[in-house]
Image (cartoon, rainbow, N blue to C red):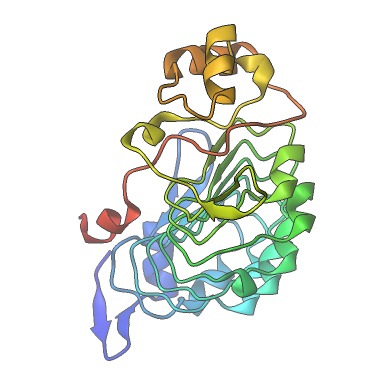
Length: 259
């Protein structure tokens, strides 16, 4: 797609967008506008109500329009590595979404709408590399969620509702200022170590006896990740969770500069 640079960034016309729309082998219609220097969400995209996937990652977008709820056919939305400080309430109208990536923005907890709880078909939600310190308890309704990324934020504890998500298989909360209780009841910062990189959030029933013992042992420094992964494949549903960490993803800040 040709880039039309202006004082406010790259301009995308409806004609440009229609030309860039591609049909995938699975029949989904995908529009990729990644890394194009877009600073303002192209309003013309709101007319493409037949899109299944939209990639606007690695741009400079600061605000999403309320009209984004009109894109009711969306199943996949990637907005990582932009400059979003909030998300509009209307995103809750995208009830068909199974994938939502808001990683590497400037989001605060106050900027997340309560309507996120309406996205009950979400399987993957990436909120990493933001400024979040809490999530709304109503997000417990995201019962289809399988992957949740919260890394590189400001969480001092894992959101309580996460433990109730029965289909969740992976949570990444690495590099947050997590707190832990010590014997006298006072809270202190959790000490970090190089071995924390390869830890999953899993139910105890998915661990072999040795891994379970290590997870329960505060002094344990190693986790048999291969064993854990094997258990995850064998058994997918569970009601409770332990060990609030997971495998870290590659730093999303790199994505913005990749071609």
